[in-house]
Length: 99
Image 1 (cartoon, helix red, strand yellow):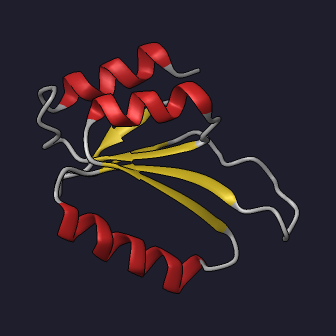
Image 2: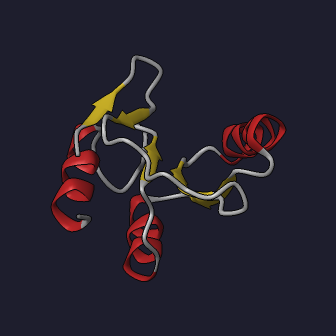
């Protein structure tokens, strides 16, 4: 899995999503400290991928890590502005702790 930082602060991964049945949504974790932005991204995601997306949201790296301890998530979107770590260090923490 490769995590790629984007200029707008979001990150993505080059790992292909698993092939799922149409009735089975893809799990995505969004780690974004800005509540307004995370709700906007949630609305946009649901309007585009309503039936195929299971979106969980966390407002900090710590909350995201706690979620990942209990859930398998093939796609993580993280803002580089998370307050409990600095930018790419947060991405490194995720890479070390999630397979």
